[in-house]
Length: 156
Image 1 (cartoon, rainbow, N blue to C red):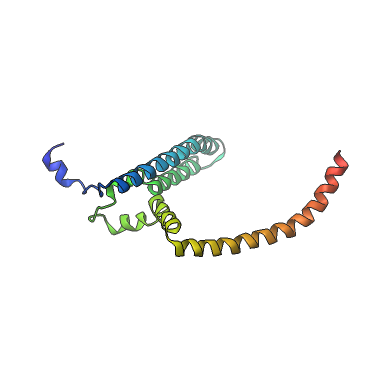
Image 2 (cartoon, rainbow, N blue to C red; image 1 turned 30 degrees about the vertical axis):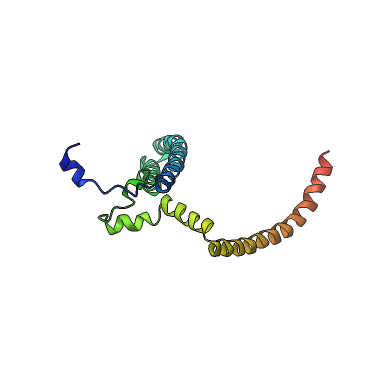
């Protein structure tokens, strides 16, 4: 790399141990998510392409929609985003997209887990949601278990 190339590179992020460790862990998470995306997208794109070729009057539509979804996922994962975490020269569009990517999700999760007030709010909200789910399950479960146990008894 020439000195000219080094000047055009964004500044490196904070080099402290906690920051590097955090970026390493997030990078591993991103690699896992990216690998899972590839694992799903590979057969899905093949199926979409074959369905389009066999049955579509516009054979590429489904395939290209699958590719667009993959591209959006790539942007959301932003695999190498840690290198740009201190880049003050990024465009407003990139900065806005950064607020909607995997890094932002991890940041919100970290804030929620480390901030006692956020944890309390999360706990309260979670408790309310759990109560709603339990009410729904009890309502559905009572009707379902009555009919389910009758059909199970008849089959044995």
